[in-house]
Image 1: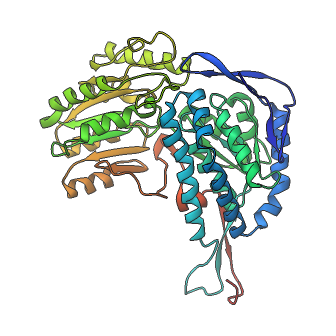
Image 2: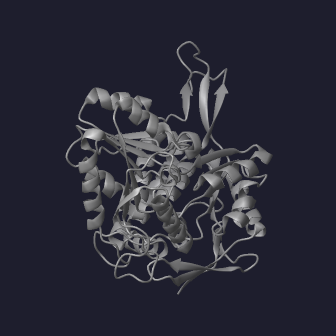
Image 3: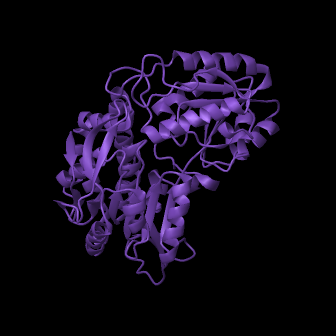
Length: 481
């Protein structure tokens, strides 16, 4: 049993004001794997005070110094691949090989991309030739509260922390209480790299306690939250009392539009993408829309691919998927699978219950529904598990209508070999991101959504800008940079 009851505040590991033990559960075994302490309002006050005190000096450091610090963080992070992968695998159930590659790698990639973007970023820039003495200054936003989820922990932690460090902000991080160990290790990495006291602080806790105290705190200037749409609404309401900036990266219900002329690997690619991380990704392509001429074959292929996916312990090496994160999620997914059956969708793979041979652990059968429509619950709600819903369409216009008929707008996908069709679809789909024909977004591309998928962008230049105020200065001495 790992014991991690301390918080990282003002450059030191400190005991909580009021001890409040919380067991972290290994979803592969359903047994406790660690014990942490959940923070209180007093812990939040102490962390925010440290961040506030550290802000003036940190904001005045040069961008070059802040970038150099992040380069040092990256060096230390590289040495922690095995340790970070093991922590994530144990606490949230990503298979160990995937944890050491994709989960750890997400943090590595974002940090490297931010450093590159920062070196090319003009923190002070001319307005234009028409105004030679006017400058636009990008200035740190202030004290930032960061609340991160359990599903891609290092992905979200680095998207927030590294961008804020480069911007000149100070911060308090509240990681998910479901997967806190990776964030505590990350705090150790920042400490080893020499982050100044008070610039980065970490307080464990739940949303109702620490989350509410942070997002409503009068000395917090900005909130950056990744999680459910329900929680995002509550945070926005709480933060509104102090008129602080709120960045939200929320849920999704992505459409994967497969036209009849799509490449031969389009269906398999879509199923495997959906099942990755046990379906626990906000940008998962959970609604597969297939053009009628290819529909029957696609359903048959999708079922075969899902049936070929193995499910097993996160502690075992291999190319399988692991459990979902906890009992609450497991039960929610089981209920939604049953809802799909009850509402008349055709179950072609998977179903309720655990996979054969697994009677313990939060394991879900890779599940595929066909013959669904966009009014069914499984097509409307974010399931956050390995469940794919397939629907037919006839025309491009119908595909656009179905894809956009959702309260979410994070990522949509298009599969076609016709360039004109692809471009029209990309411009018609209401989502913050569109990925086509299996091509991932380029390094440094912004991540974020429209509608109830949130506001703001993370990653690259846009991620840096999100943690900065914009100041217009007239009368600038033109001899200065």
